[in-house]
Structure formats: structure tokens, C-alpha cells
Image 1 (cartoon, rainbow, N blue to C red):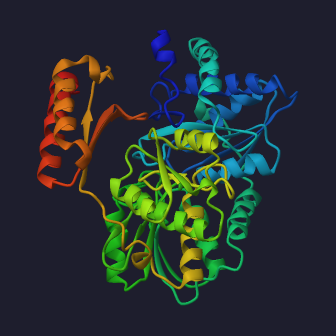
Image 2 (tube, helix red, strand yellow):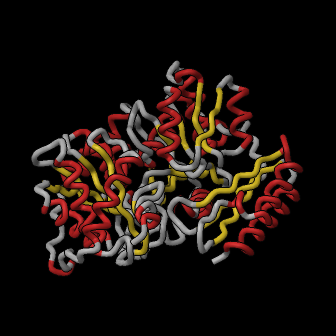
Image 3 (cartoon, rainbow, N blue to C red):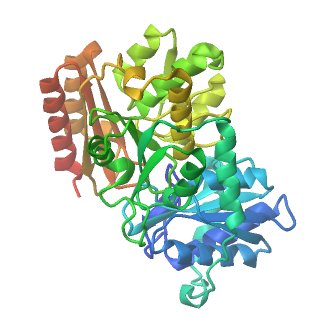
Length: 454
């Protein structure tokens, strides 16, 4: 394998691919366990690693193969079972594990899976650390030394870890009770389905749980945070006050108001920023969003005396910008919300509880809390690509982008980027004029498709 392939093992959110195919074939997974174990042995004689997974059919065997690689290096492995990604980050830090591993492909379809790595501090491993592991992973993977997954005993799950995570969530919002609220919560047949029933039972209220029957193949299937219109419609049908919807590994959350309307991460950032500012908890009166966040959010925050910085897309890059500027709040339009005073990584269930706590304390609904957010028309076009060449080096594409930027100027934004986890180019256009928005999005997407289309 080439050095170029080596640098493609880890994307913006770990390793992700079709389960059973490179780089999620058994050899590479086993090699990942070896490389992680050897890395941890540099600072611990007998490192401990905690593993969590989502509900995909492939998650148990991937976890078993990776654990076998870890054990080969002398590491001890414990399993938290099916838990959200942020639960593993929390448990690694709380219980003194040297690392945490999550087997999940987040919002991707069930055929995909992935490996996400956390350090002892509960933060995702730095890019440099992951890249340093890649040479060893590729070396071991080439030896075809992995055991047959079918012969391995699945990891034995410890339910106490799941209970510990639920207790942690409740401790973040002491005193919260949902009495008087009717809520619809869509668990996407994913990791949230394992903890949401007990979590919301303990909070009281009338909580209607949807998609809590995972079968290994229905995770994210026409449900969850990728399809927020589903929970918005259910809120209307069931006469609920609001809706919550999570993605497959429950590290993000989207909301629905009482008027069949979707409330995304931008609106959550606005609510949370104002609340933290009112309580003197918003350090520097600053919020970190991303290049994809709507211009309307920036304007609404400014009216409240709050600055907004933009980071590249990806919660690890939002966190880096937050740490540089000592920011207390950051997040993405997709519903990844970072609250470092509470957790080290984005947590959809925690985000939901923070919003519910705000509603309970202010006695205001989410529609009222976000009513002054004027959203500029925005479109995102995903173009499947066969390769990820620098767009500025393709004259036909670069010229189309320049034409859009020159016409829109201060009345819109153009953001073109490659997905960090899929073979996609994402074309985002935001403009006061919906006609101009659509015209430029179609022109740029067409230029990329013509030159790079899969």
C-alpha cells in the first residue's frame, strides 16, 4: 500500500468504511489493536482499554477482532456494550483507562462501520498520534495475521458502565424533571436506544420513544438526526411540546418545535450561548461554530453581544479553536454541541438535557427561545467523487466558484469542501436570494461532477 493510502486510514472521525472491506477488514482491524496497544505500552506496563459499540450487525465481530490485537500486546480490554460514543470518552477518563475505542460509523448506513479512538483524558486522539500509528497498522495488516473473527468469543459487556454513564448525564442537570412536558425522542435504532429509555424514565414526564428496536440493519434507516423531519411530524401528530432526534452513535442531537419545524445545531448554539452569557459562564462572550453555520446565527449572536468564530467542519477542529480561545461553547449545524465544562466531546443526550433544563428554568418553549433567528436560504449539494483533487487546481471548477463569490459578496457565502468520511464533495451556498443560491450551487456541483464525478 502506498504512503498516500497510509494517510487515508484515519479521516476526520477515525477509520470508517464498509465493514469487512479495507480498511475495515479483519487484518487491518487486528493491526489497529496491535498498534494502539504498542502505543499505550510506551507509558503503561499493562494498559487498560474500554470498548463501546453501536448497534450495527458488524460491531460485535469488529470489537472482538480489535480486542484480540490489543490483548496480544498485553493490554486489558473491558466492554461497555452498546453505548453512545461520548459514553466511552467519559468512561475512559472516569475509570482510569489508558484509551477508549468506539466501534461505530455514526450517521452512516448499517453496512458501514468505523473505529474511533479516545485518550485517557477523554479527548479524541490527536491527528499526529493517529498518523504515527498508521505505519505499524499497515505493516501488520500486510502480514495477514488476524484470527478468524468467527472463532472469537464476543466481548463480555459490563452493564455497570452503562449505568454509570446515565448517572453522569443526570448529574449534569441536577434537579431537572420533565413533568408537564410531552416529548418525542427518536433514537435512530442506534446507541441511544440502549440508554434513553432508562434516562428518560428517571426524569419523568411524558416521553414517547421512537426507533428503539435495533436489528443490526435499521440504524439511521429513515430515522434519527439525518431525517429530522420525521420527528418534527411526530411532534405534530402526537401534540407534543418538542422533539429530540439523535444519530446512530448519539453524539449529536437535532430538535423539533411545536409547528412541524426542525431546529438544528445553529439554533441550539444560539439558545445555549444566551443562557451561558446570562449566567456569566460564556467566557469571552464567544462561540465557536463552523464554516457551515448560517449567517443568521452570526447576526443573532451579534445582537446579543456575542462573537462567533468559524472553524473547519469537524468537532475536533471546533474543539481545537475553542481551546485556543478558551471558549465555553462550540458546535456544528449538524447538532454536535461542545460544552467543555460538562464533557470532553459532543454528546447528543447531554445536549438534549441541557436544552430541556433551559426550558424548565425559563418556562419558555424552544420556538420562543429561537424566534429571532433569521435563517438565510442555504443549500448543500453532495457530489460523489472518484478522487479528492484540490479544487483550486481544476480551472473549470475554480472559475465557477470565483463567479459565485464575486456575485454574492456580502450577501452570501460559498463553502466547498470534501467530506472527511465519505467520497463526497459538499457544495454549500448561502444567500439572501434563493434564486442565486440555487443557480450557483447547481453550477459548481455540475463543474465538480464533470471533472471528478464517480
